[in-house]
Amino acid sequence: MTEAATGMGRHRLFAGAELRALRRRSGLGQGAMAARIGISVSYLSQLENDDRPVTRTVADALARAFPLDWAGPSGDADAKLAQMRAAMDDPLFADLDEPPALHRAVEQQPDLASRFIRLHAAYRRAEERRQMEDDAIATGVGGGARQPWEEVRDWFHLAGNYVDPIDRAAELLAGELDAQPLGDGLIAHVLKRRHGVDVISSDDEAAAMRRFDGPRGLLTLGRALPPETRRFALAHQLALLEFKGQIGAVAQAADLKSTEAQTLLSVGLANYAAGALLMPYARFRETARALRHDIDRLCQRFGVSFEQACHRLSTLQRPAARGIPFFFCRVDMAGNITKRHSATRLQFARFGGACPLWIVHEAVAIPDRILVQLAETPDGVRYVQMAKGLVKASGSYARSPRRYAVALGCEVDHAAEFIYADGHDVANRAAATPIGISCRLCPRTDCDQRAFPPSDRAIEVDPDIRDVVPYRVV
Image 1: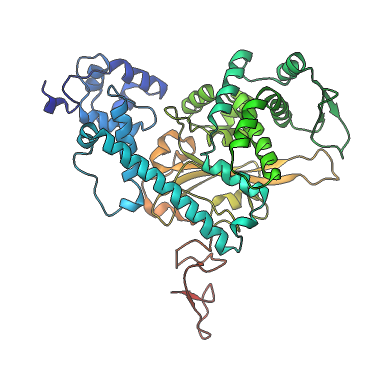
Image 2: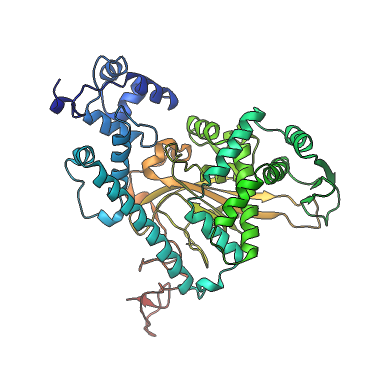
């Protein structure tokens, strides 16, 4: 067969083993796999048995259907092609068609393709920084006025919410302990054996949820802590002691303005390590994909809370082993975003309120019920997201429980991998709710839910006309 016939280069390229492994990882039969990539079952069978080579058309279909899993027989070239296609999907190029021979450009000019990919990534980072500044200016919060916790929050965001040395160290320790899920008793045993730390419980309602007395080697946990929170607190303490060097090095290298921010970052990194210890990267990513990111089932497998599992999914950004790009946020009863990260093109307001049309606001008022929303941002990108209201008990009638909601979502291109998208017509643009970042940053002029006009647009007020909002954006 000629190069033109295969479309894959000078040699016939076979990938039967890779195709079978991909199909089994995805939990698909041959019929479902063939339908997913638009070929017949008999053709797929021939490909899997290496009776026929993988053509460029098939490789392109596999890259579109399995963008995170399909590396293909040409490895780096196909991965680079997928990255090029992701960059081309940016709304920046919405008025341009994909080049007709993009795969050939990647194969013949790999260095140029790499430069384009890096340039686009730099552009996205610059856009995020500009958006952060616009958000700060629009709400009157200057860069120097940011609180330490805001500095730390933005540090994690710009780091991609993935910290490689800490994540790998936690995964290595989890492998040594070799238990799934990691139980309270095992973590407490390791704390005692390796660090001489005893764990006790306290009934004192006024006491902190977790208190560590280093000189005495004593960790005190509140007895009212839910099991998942208690397990996370134990993992946090173990991470602080086990990964002190890695945490210190990362915190020291961070360009933060205050010692309070440095300390908060160290705490945040220990929390990150605790999540990575309870949900080791490769094992968690593989299980999540097999379960199609069913959060409740992940909680059962790893002994973690709903919020912990959602948060961990947003950190699966290891190069060459990425998870689905998710956005994640936590919103309190007042609409404040208290946690947030996005590996998608969706970005959150850093100051002020979030878009009132997001389903997460409704979820706060309806605890323990999962709501699903198909949404579209002003740049035309559509997302499917689920939100769930949660109540964290205080352990006493005298103290109000904490009520909040978490949201997790991805772009519709990944809907087939996200169980919460089942039953929703993700291809129907008319079914999507138009959402924005925040009212001050949203360019939509026809939204009836506005709290404020856009900060960069003038308004016109006619005293003789009253509509839903008392002004018109011009």
